[in-house]
Amino acid sequence: MWLVLGLVSVALGVLGIVLPVLPTTPLMILAAFFFSKSSPRLEQWLLDHRVFGPVIADWRESGAISPKIKVIATGTMGAVFLLSLIMGVKPFVLNIQAVCLGGAACFALSRPST
Image (cartoon, rainbow, N blue to C red; front, side, top):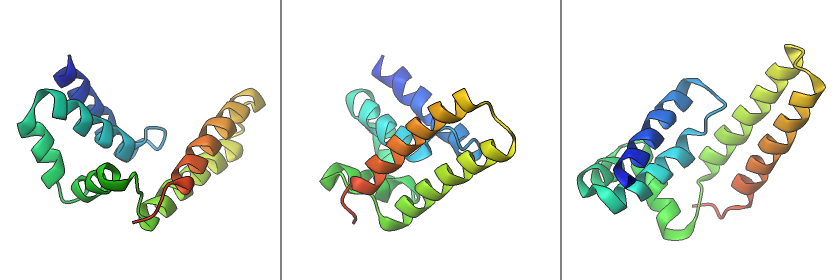
């Protein structure tokens, strides 16, 4: 079960690279957690990854998010919301987006920086 959850998290995280509604970094952190329970080899692969490894290590050590990642994350969230406004998304959906993206941005910005 842990292995499948880890693989699903990685797959969703990879999709999140091109789909701004899926948060890549949290999904990779989650995948590392799942792999720590099921596959030391896959966990080590994530920890050694040049992009995700340092982010996962920072998270594990202190729950920290680097300032660069905070800017990218909040900027992407803002861009997604702005795009939704430009596309004329229904107000009900915009409200849901505002709450979800706002909550995610507040969480990311409230974490300690590396």
